[in-house]
Image 1 (cartoon, rainbow, N blue to C red):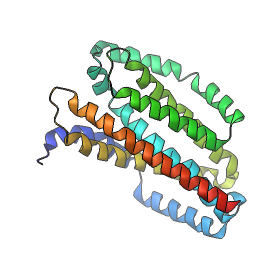
Image 2: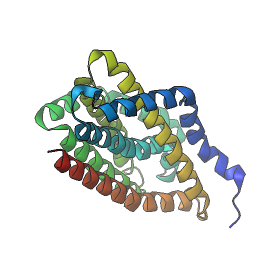
Image 3: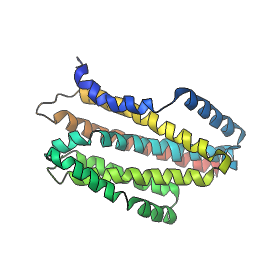
Image 4: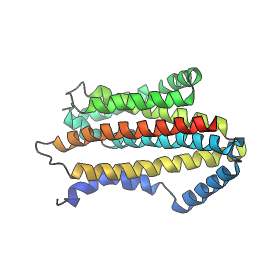
Length: 242
C-alpha cells in the first residue's frame, strides 16, 4: 500500500514534538542510574521486588494511559470538525476545558486519599477507555462530552502518578525520579503518536473523517488489551513481592 507522506507528516508532528522533549543523553544517564539503584535495592529504601512493582504500576501503566489520551489532545481540532462543531467555537471549548481543570486537582486529591494508587490508576484507565469508546460514534455536538472527559483525565492521572512518586522518593532523589517519569511519558507519547499517524495513513479518508473514525475504533481494543496485561503483570509482581 502506498503511503502519502504529505498526509502522514501533519499527523506525525505530535510524535516529533514529543520526542524533541527527550534529551537523549540525559534520559540514558538517568535511566541507567535508576536501574543501578533498582539492582541494589537502594531506590525509595524498599526491596527490589517492591521497586519493580512501583516502576510498573506508576510509570508503565501511567505511560500507557497518558500516551493515548495526550495523543487525542493533539488532534482535537480534527475531531471537533468531525462532530460538526464550527471552528470559531474551538477557542471557547479550550477555555471551558481549562476552567474544568481548576476542579480536577481537588477531585484527584479526594480520590487519592480515599483509594490506593493502584485503584486510582484503574479508575483513570477505566474513564479513559469509556471516553475513547465514546469518541467512535462521533456524535454531532454531544461528541464533545467524551472529549472533555478525556482531557480532564490527563490532570487526574498526572496528579496521581506524581503524588505517589513524590511520596515514595526521598528529597535527594525526588527530582530525578520525577524527571525520569516525565522523560518516559514524553517518549511514550511520541512513539504512540507516530504509530497512530501510521495507522491513520492506512485507512481511506472517504467520506471525509472515515480514516479518523477507523483509527479511533482500532485503538480502543489495543488500549484495553495493553492496560489489562499491564495490570495483570503488576498484580503478579505485587504477589511475588508479598
